[in-house]
Length: 309
Ligand SMILES: [Zn+2]
Image 1 (cartoon, rainbow, N blue to C red):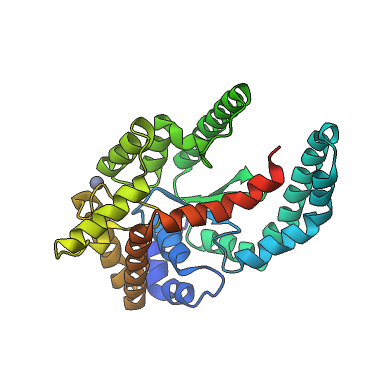
Image 2 (tube, protein in one colour):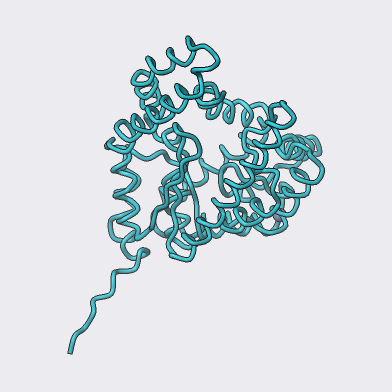
């Protein structure tokens, strides 16, 4: 009779030596280790993603290398007459794609991220957002992959719709991420990333229906609370780029508390590191919309300059 050896549970692997190993890993950023890898491996979130190369510890350096490899093609686009620009932009985009493969996908940093996915029994799904920006999704369950696929179809369709509308009106969109105008996209992505439905509902209402700045609202909420002599509950800011519906959202807090408890039980240093991450998350939300805008601009501005007609 054959006995199939079941793969050892991720929690016991983390208890044995993986936690220590992860804490000592120099090639992954702290928030990536905790919020992207461990929260998914521990089944707190169904899925997470990091933007590459921006969320690599050497993201700037890798970005510069890509720029260097594409400098001539960029110059050609800039020097070209209007009738030649279209073809040269296509060449440039392909050059950026090829350079990203060489520089990012062949890097030891990327390899380290892939190795950690394997060690923690996570699957990955790569999405090109722009030729120079990718998103690396992490999840345990194969079901997430089909959800991601359909989500990316919605995203592409929304982008295309916005582009056509832009071409027709000869106006540029203010939105760096046009898919954020789709409730369907935002609700599905929120669910997949493990955000509480109350927080997703508020986000969608403000972003899509009211055209309001979620970042500004979230920042004002923290400011207001402090004025009243209270402190926001850091646990409610359980992952970066997540905006709780209110600074004391019960559902969001529970996720943060659960994460802290689980991580601390695996290794006290993981608990401490998580506290640092979520404290930083509150600071980021408070400093918004200034910081978020700047960060998003940094991520997209160059790509837009390079690849937009
Ligand atoms: Zn909420």
